[in-house]
Length: 149
Image 1: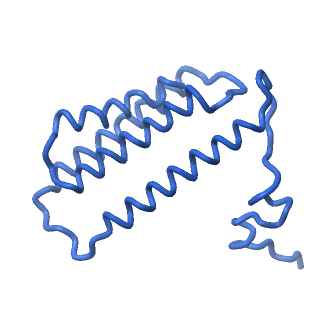
Image 2: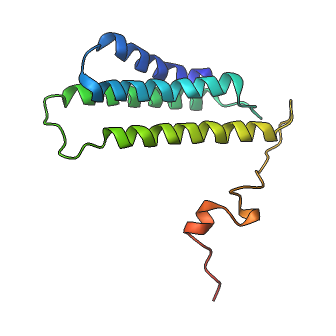
């Protein structure tokens, strides 16, 4: 699983070295890419308990996709640096939402890792807060089931 995320993480790290300037927007973008894939690598090493293997061809396709998406984000930003700044500044609210999302995702993965016993290979469905069984599932609150006619 390290193979999935490491190339994209290295793109983020290399972008700091290759493009040290670029303003605060580029700094936020480089940081977001690097933090996102570092979190994934950290989870692979210390959080996740995997139940099975992944086919090598799937691993390569996903890894190359992540690599090129990370590379494309940085490259597109470099190409667009001459464009005028947006009239509405959303970088800071977006950064806050990114950090909330990545923190929530990490916490979610941590909770899921606690469901599976060490060496267990069975799939566990969470129960409790925010699950359909207790009626607090967010998706059921937003999109309640329609009664059948």
